Image (cartoon, rainbow, N blue to C red; front, side, top):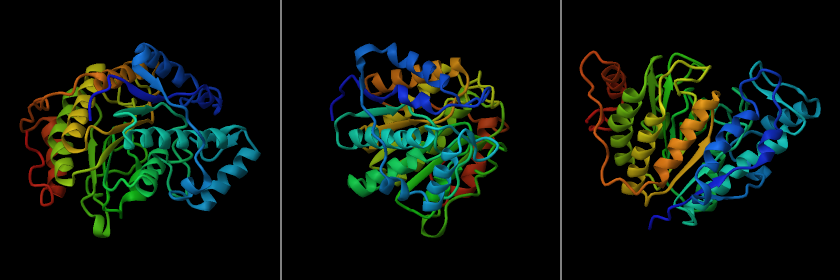
Length: 352
């Protein structure tokens, strides 16, 4: 598939109609920062209109009681589903539009209408469990999109990479018994939501297709880039996905107020280059990203700019060299913990 020099992006002002309580970090203004970054690329970014996910598409992932609980809460809105997760009068409609936007963007990539895509949607989704909204999330956008690809587009094996600073518990729990989906998460640990230790490795016939990379507070570009090169790359090569989806949070940025990581613009650029090169090698370049967290305007602008820049660059001829993982370093400790759990299944895990 040839490089088009453009990227499909789902962006819609309606996503700002999910109204936050005063002072809540998951607020409509987040998308102003993301939109500023998108606009800087001009016509190299091709808009893609979202549409609401159907009830059938949502119920592939979520229990009917989950949907009814949101419907009931919205009828009484504004209000909260838990201490972190709120609804406003338009929240159900906008959450359906977020899930549908993720589906349409992923479907565009799967069909070859675009090589890469970004869905700049809200509310975010990766904490939403099959039966429980939580962590700012109502519907699990990336899980709904993944299932739509498999059920409607004939895509078989999928890799979901979650680099949000928080563990994607909802995505993991939905797919942890499904060997057709490899879920790999890098996240600050221990931290909200408390899940994501490296010993959580999948269940039943899908043991090994959940790979958690818990990282201590203070990790930055070297640790994230090194973890992708030493863990993601060998695991993905062994799994051989047909398409890559990314839960693309920007809350590991050094400016983010909700976490304690140190990623920079350059770190997000290098991570995007790794994913792009891996996709070119394994699945005809097919990559679709869905916005998750990110609560500092500077982090959202820098992260979104870096991701789009990395997706628009000419394909890298080879993967970059991993930062050193000397004994005693944070990177060595991170990789070693994961390797102890998974090396029998992925013998090359940890190699530079």
